[in-house]
Length: 399
Image 1 (tube, rainbow, N blue to C red):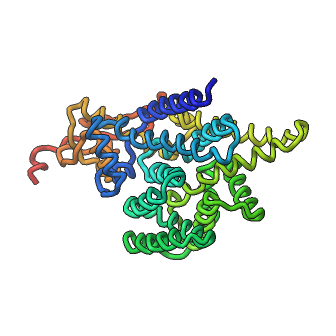
Image 2 (tube, helix red, strand yellow):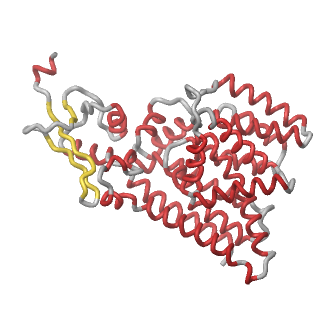
Image 3 (cartoon, rainbow, N blue to C red):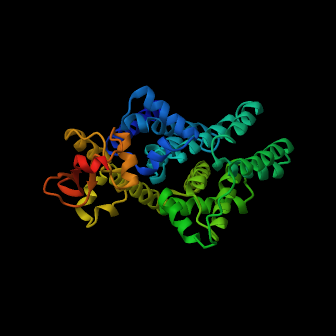
């Protein structure tokens, strides 16, 4: 089958899975804050999608899905100089689509998905005029603080390659980013190095993260550094150094490690193919185990509600913050309740997305009342949320 048709098939299946998962999620408090409180570029993108396609969960997550699909195409394209065969690039994008962090970035309203797409777009733009590259860099300054690390990496790359214009432009952009956004030192100095490593391992899966780290080191000692190596390695080292004294915002750093994936694929395949068949066993085993773990993780994410059967406290479920709110709003509307005091600012803001505003006429509380309306949400028969809706008497409302 033609490799482009296979790529389109990958994209189609991935999109269907993501839209299915979108329909099973509720807006989280963090996502609601981006939608209602923020004035970021991502805020305006999401708001535009909701205006065009209606106020629903699919429209909420549609921009993230589209940015993810564009990122897949960009990764497939920029990996061409590193991977000789089209089938190798197909394997690369398949693994990319299965990464835990990529699945999250493709679904959740968060800056990570946008940052990944724009980083890959910048690398792709290097095929074209310098004007396009520099225009993108200047525009990135006004998108998000995360691009300060792109400017830092490009400054070092420009200095090393004696590209004076690139180095000067990026040092100016770097200074401008700090002046525009400032820098949060995250309070009292405290080591979070192991936490940072754990986050990276969770985003990429442990085996793949370790291999990416190894590849960056190997390219360093063999002096094969190119722009992908500079950006991914410099930002990774910067994040780990910062983690020695403070908790890092992982969404600023993790997208840069995606740029190392073509390097890792090339290194792995070269090591595999230079060996005789009888000596390729450990490489097949490493690849098979990594792929199996990624597939298992993807299946768990897709059917994550089944996990409530094995969790004593529903709030400990990894996706609990993205559950419940939509179902609560549906039950409230079915009982003709269009506004309520949720006594919880996070749930209050989430309910706002589903058309339930804040008022003092009704109360949503965990306290049982004989006249209250029970609000119980069950997943696969397991109660995961229990509250009661009470209506305040008129004389109390007057107060």
